[in-house]
Amino acid sequence: MRIFAILFVSVVVSATRAFADEPQLSAREIYEGACASCHGVDGRGAADSGVTVPLPDLGDCRFVTAENDGNWRYLLLHGGQSFGLSSQMPGFEGILTVEQINAVLDYIRAFCHDPAWAHGDLNFRRALITTKAFPEDEFLIKPEFDKGRDGVRDWVTEMSFERRVGARGQIELSLPFAAHDVTGGATTGGIGDMTVAYKHVLYANRPSRTIVAAGVDLGLPTGDRHRHLGEGTVKFAPTLLIGQRLGPIVLQGQIRGDAPIDESRADRSVRYRLAFSYPFSSLKRDWVPTVEIEALQNVTAAQHQLFVTPQIYRGLSARGHIAVAIGAQIPVAGDPDPFDVRVLSFFLWEYSDGGLWW
Image 1 (cartoon, one colour):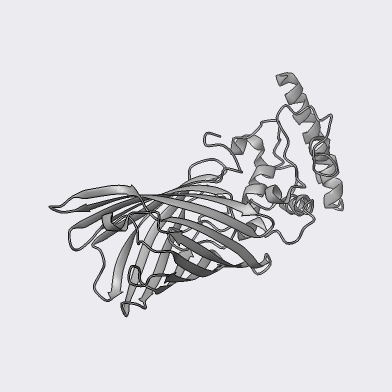
Image 2 (cartoon, rainbow, N blue to C red):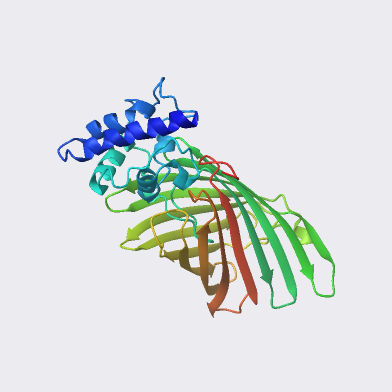
């Protein structure tokens, strides 16, 4: 089998060298000469390819639109092993030019015939607080620690499951596990308030690197309010989201309103969030330093606060489908600070892109 794989790669490399010498060849001709023997003329896989691992369906819009061009380009240049995938996928660096690689990539993406699916280049890296506009298939664990000015300490670990719905929708289910500790008093712990959310992309434009989405969160009082584990009321939170790439900088914004049914138990508020990120490269696994700014307008208490959250994001896997981020939120202006220290983080797994260990 190993000899077969070597012969297979040699044949593909020899063929693509010939295509690289013909600059007038179209993307279709390059694809059919270099890729179709395995992936099929229609992208759904060739029946007699001899490849020993399952081939992806390049006509599946969910699959072909999830990744940004950076990851796709790196895979085509360096082969499957560069991303922890099959070594039977050869790399074409030095064989195809960058222009040819980009042309073939556009051709592959065109196997998705539904233009409603947002392009993967609009799938910007997640920030700690500002919600992203791009719909995802993700599982997240989000630990948070607060040390209040009155000697109160809170630990919250929220688990979130996100699932894309159709071309532009996403549902999310979040459940926090909380512990509340008072200096000189009792410590309580348990389940907090569950959140069910829906998000929908309203506008997605790859040339302008812009994506806009809207959504609503429904907070359910599953936590015990008397033990400081929940707010004790149903809460609606409509939100407007935007993502925009401006040169090397990625800007993500959010306007979110919190509207509790019982205002005596939870405050009405509006939150304005901006996240400025500087990805070190187009690869999802690379470092991304980010600074978030959040302005909180507490309508019920007639208070205003401003927070800054510096943070760092890093992919842990070759493809970046597993990642972590950590940062600290700092009160910088407004009414009395609600806490001394707030540390936030998350562990992210894009489960549709691969397993936890590969």
